[in-house]
Structures are given as C-alpha cells and as structure tokens.
Length: 375
Ligand code: OSB
Ligand code: MG
Image 1: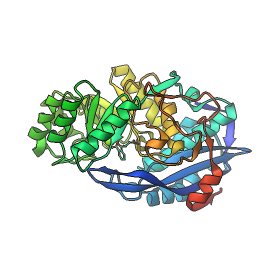
Image 2: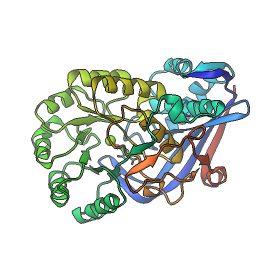
Image 3: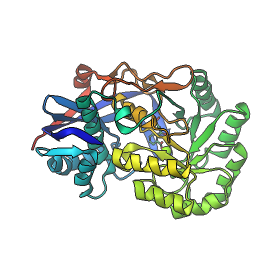
Image 4: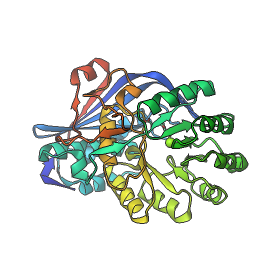
C-alpha cells in the first residue's frame, strides 16, 4: 500500500478520552465500567488521519496498558516516523518493527496512517486495504451475567436486533450449565463462548462437556501466551478452538495453524500490531481456508470504523464482534454512530478515510489528557 507521494509526517496527537459504558462489561479477568479510549491523530501537510490504540488501563488482557502505549508512542514510535517522508505502509511498519513488542501502540499509529493515506487519496480505508464487501456480518459478545435469565434477556434482545451470532463469556463455575441452558432455549442460533484464558489443561474434561452444546467455537480457553496446550486440547475436542490473546502477530498465527492449536482465527488489528500484520494473517487464513472473523476491544467509533473496513476483506467469513455504537455507549465519538441493520450487518462506508466524521467538540469535552509529539 503505497502513499500517493512520500508523505512527510508532521505531528502526532495522543488523546485519552473517557467514555462511560452503558452497562459494565465483565469477563473472566475482570470488569470494566468505563472505557478510557486512546486516540491517535497523525498529521501530514493539511491532512490528518485517526487511529485508536486498544490497550486497556490495566495489563489484564495483555501486558500493554494505556500508560505503556502512551510512553512507547511518545518516546519511541513517534520519533521514529515523524519529520521524514514515508512512502508506504510497509515502510512505516519497517520503522516500527525495530522496536520489540507493543503491538497495540504500533497499531494505533498504523491505523492513523492508513486513514491519513486514504483521505489524501480520496478513497475509503476499506478500498485502500483491499476490502470487497459493502456490508459486514456482525455478532455480539455478552459479558458474564449474575443469572441465566439475565443472560438470556440479552440474548433475546440482540437476536431481535438482527445480530447473527451470540458469544457468551465463560469462566470456571460459569460455563457448562449456563451454556447448555442457553442452547436449550435457542436450539438453532450460532453460539460461541470465550474464556479469556481462564482454564488450564487440567480442566480438559470440563471443556469437553461443551462439545454437547453445538458451539461454533470455544475462544481462548487456555493461557494468553500458549499455543502447545491448545493444540493438545484441540486434539481431544470436537468443537473448533479459536485463538485470540495468543495470536500476537503473523508468526504466532502461522505457528498456531501449523501445530493445530486452533481451527478458527480471531483477528484484532490492535493485538497483532496493525494493518501490515493483519493483512498478512488475512491472506494466510484465506489461502488455507481457515475461518476468520474480526474481534473487538470495546472500541470507540474510530477503532470500530477501522474494524468495519478490515472485516470487508473477502477472507472474513464469520460474523465479527463489531456491534453498534449504542451497544456500548450512550454517545460515540463519530457521526453518525455505527448502526446494525435489521439483517445483522453493518454497512461499509465508501467515503474517504474511515468514512465517519469525528465529533471533535465532544472529544474535547471528554478528554482527560492530550499530548502532541513533533519531530
Ligand atoms: O476477548 O474478545 C475478547 C472485550 C474486552 C476484552 C476482550 C474481549 C472483549 C470482547 C468484546 O469479547 C468485544 C467487543 O464487543 O468489542
Ligand atoms: Mg476473546
């Protein structure tokens, strides 16, 4: 993906914006009541592009945090790319690759760069990265609930809104009984579960009981950095495993598929380090016929718009965790908000860049911290 002409990157803006969640989101590793959204804006000449760094405040999903990403972007990634011409996404990626780890920080910058290039060229991000779909299929991810009835109320609500797949969070003690009951009440829906790394191989017997639930997949049952034990577990399981946390880049995805650690791939552009890695993983899955879908990190509309663009590539074959803005927030940072149509799809914008207008006044009113990085 080349730029029209090498772009001189002038400045980076790093902005933390707090958005309350309409309801708390609870998973096996903890509970979120508000989302501290980390927005990245990149300038070149009179143009700018927007990205989002999906790190959370605490290192519970992965080791990165909003604080580490702010440090790495301000002190290393920004200085490595600002003030000099950049000719392509590959060239940007090569400069960032000098630094180890910190995929979410890198992705925040790559997202802003891709939006910037798309706006300069006057094309949509979807078109720029090779997207082919005009609408993407979506599902919903439901947090842990105090009772089966509370969970089922949400299942019914999102099915009525058209969502095409329901994902339920599980953890030890809130798994087989809950999921069996949801399946009993909804015999034919596409249903999956996500453990966020809450189990070990010692729980294999319990996880095998989920085979009776007819699930589309079991997402990340074992440790966040494991591949080998997942391969062992997959051997004794009829249900497909899907990896999320463990797939931190292209090589990890390739290795996971080579050893049979999963049969389905969850793509999170932040977790894998940006568009460069994401596009390579997409091509790998497409070439091997591995089902792929776009995960979510409770993003604001900016990260969500990038997810919509990415999910418009042909290799995304299952509904993503790309829900409507109002599934999470009373008010989003983009106009219009992301909407889910009654057929369970989100339209892919065809206007320049991410295809949504950023509500800068609203952002300002919710900003907790903003820093500008210059060469
Ligand atoms: O594992 O996919 C996950 C939310 C926060 C952290 C991890 C995960 C999730 C979700 C929600 O499942 C995805 C979304 O709706 O954005
Ligand atoms: Mg997950």
